[in-house]
Length: 321
Image (cartoon, rainbow, N blue to C red; front, side, top):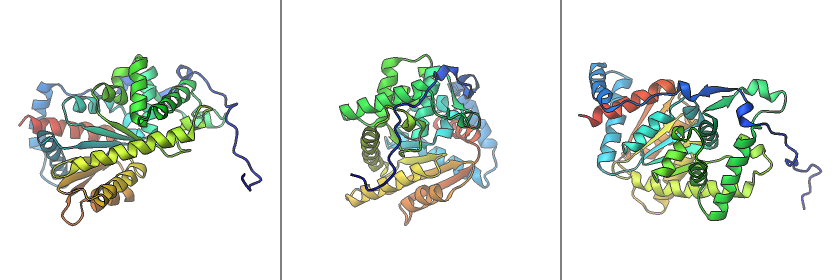
């Protein structure tokens, strides 16, 4: 029995509202459009015209590493924060997935929430300032209930959080499923791992949130990601897109587990894409894992909605050479 005078809050009486009644700031009408094959070939002309100065050689090197990794059947792991999803980039990543340039995806908890809402109603990103004062922030009924139910069922069935949500979306077939990374990845049997931090995500506020299930499925995804990180050896690529803390920490721990267990992990590429360069991505992704000749790391600065389509175009341009 606890020695504290205070007791954990009871969430059973939380009030929710229908997801489609909420104003969302991001809709699929504003999402990016992937290039078709003819446009991809024409893109090579643009990249040939760029100066070979500062960030351009880094962008070319990352794109070339991804193309080479696909040719060598090596891991190409895309780690993405929630902001990448809600800036309309899922169609770009789904297209790269279908072309073989994505072998697995790692998300934080907010990435799953935005992805689910996009699939369910075609929009996401609530107005936090407006909702917080009334205690309504994060209280969309379907988001909390559907995702927590999927996680709880995943724990029961012994699968990870990402697979559990992907399975739920494929079974439910919501109207905008084609825009969902988790839905499309599950259909193509591409692993999605989700790395939750308890208390940070809105679904943890809902009555059916179960800490044991969240912890079990997210830890299973950490173990799965670590197994996939082994496949980076000798030519793979790990990209960190817009995660300042969670995914860089997860990736560093995965690297140390692989090496602790005696697995070779060298000659691979890492890259961090963000509009602000933070300490952890640059230290835990770009520098430490590839130190002492183990590989090459790159930092590229810019808005996701500009840089990720540009990277995708560079990949397609290199692959058409």
